[in-house]
Length: 328
Image (cartoon, rainbow, N blue to C red; front, side, top):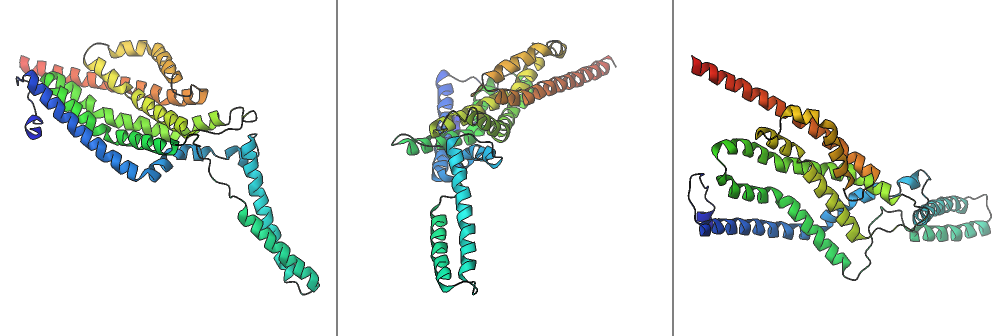
């Protein structure tokens, strides 16, 4: 049945409601099967997935500590522990040198050996400075947080196939002319989406987390819950992936003749205002996230206008050549 239903459907083909539902069901089954398989892989490799998701937080850890500017008591305690450990190691090395010095009395050398051993034991027991990690506050939170992250990762990986199944289902309803407009635009969607997710992960998230976690840090003992961090990260990445679809929307309305390139250029100020409002509603709503989100969106808007103008000029030249050939 799946092989029969998932065949390419021509625009002129007449399918009954039952055949349409069978095709939709088969495509949903295929998408669900791939999603389940990807989820199994992500859950199996959950350590790697969690390391990737935690990395933007780890990049911000102890950034102010290294400059001596952190006012967070927990971070200050971590720095103190690290400095104490380094001091104990240095003291142990110095005492070992005294214990081996023949010019020192035997009693002093014996005391130096004992003190060096104690300093080394204390240094070994001192915790090393580690990257900041999210905390869990509920009994089942480690499992459920891991489960959710694996689900988010599998959805992200399955998006190209899910989009393909959606396109294959709706494209037969388009006329040949509409397909010439829709197909190139639809092919841009996954690339732009992943571009937005990549930009959010490498640029927006580290800066946003750093700003939000270190804001007023002298007033709080800052602990970041795992579920909140993962929800925030996923929402930022998804929002940026969706906002990066601006070129598709602009090219669609210009190619369909709904809006002209001249109108887009004339209303540039309003478009930038709309982009600012959209960026303001991103998760976090902090100035850093807003500015970092606005910059690529404005660039995409301007680039889309240029591309739409280029396509319009190419179409105009093609129509002029066709008219000239017909007149001949």
